[in-house]
Length: 544
Image 1 (cartoon, one colour):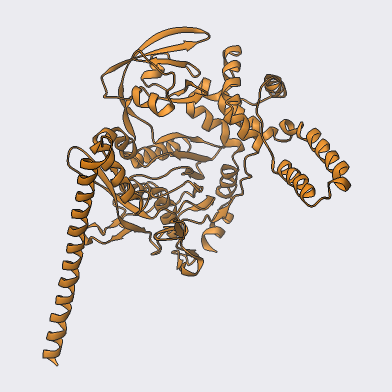
Image 2 (cartoon, rainbow, N blue to C red; image 1 turned 180 degrees about the vertical axis):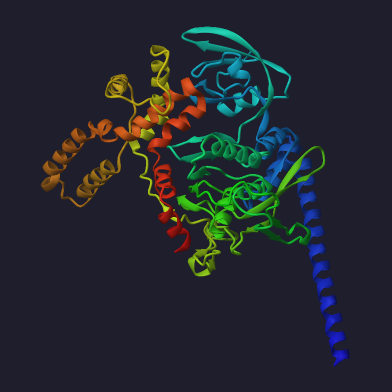
């Protein structure tokens, strides 16, 4: 018996070694083939071949067959890497946008170099360091404005028809990860976290401490992770730790390399174990956002509100490469306390068009939270309380894409030196009518679904030769709808007013003002306040 076991063991080792040898041979063979393909291309191709560009295309194509998060960064891309990982870059601290063939300042960040130099929303960027922006797009101009901290650049700007130069010293721009915190009503606090960059947990913890310190009757706190695409896993663990005891498992990573399989537990004294917590998520909340919301859900420590999250359960490491380049590689998957993985897309399997497929419902597995509630893997984090969000009207989209909110806000700011606070400022009947008057000579074409259906009806009637019988009715339908469409500005007034309010507030109160001004009408926030203000409802959700 022992001899048979020994033989089986030796056979297994031999097969493993053979498999490894086969794999090693395949790698060597294909590397040799690739090298010869490039050598022949370089030697024989009719035009000159750019080695760096050609290799970058080849590398990007290879990595694209893996998943969207495995990427190669050349030395010239390092500012982008710093922006992704650290939330910082060398620049002047301003958003820009393009209207036609012109580039404008969309928003200078409060207190950063552009703002300090007097750059304003709506300034047209005529040239950067003497080079005209004509014919350039937003990425071109953005790249020209970025650079090493401490260096200077000169912008030629146009404002109110006059051109002038502004010289700005670039700085290390570190965007705040907590973009706003404050009270949303008398006893519920709110913290908005935009990115899981360095010190995210420290900043959330400090914001929570301040809310507790300044509001002794604090009955609940909202952590807003909507639109937060993630970032550093350690920051996510430490944020959970704010409301969860020490030594709780928050997330486990599992992958091919055993040394990268890590169980991450809370390691600090929590700030509070009793105050009710609500976490807001939507379909753009991903990765670290899902670790926080998913683990707090699994541990029954918070009510999750909003929409189902993105479903990114893949872990990336950044690896150093030759010549100051780097590579971001997916090395493992996230598993949260219940044992479920939140990954929604199966990049290993593709459909007939080469697109990755979603994990099918038949392969989704049920897990249990600490209190025994059923949760599932395979499609991100499903909220405990789902809030429906009506799709944006096509009219609002057309107005936004034509920059009518932006340009009307410029006009409004010129005419109104001051306005009420973000919480008190509203779009009055007078302001809204002024906006309608502003639009009277502007174009913002949009075709609604109803118009498409009427158009299709006309085409089908013509194809099937019913037009002689239906022409009068179809023309009357088109006329009636055309008249009804004139009322769209009033029909969608609430939605348009909020977008208009955002565009105006940023002129007076920067980004914080926009966030603060939107909270009272935010359906997710309203629902969170309702639940946090009712201990019975909060406990019912967490124990059902």
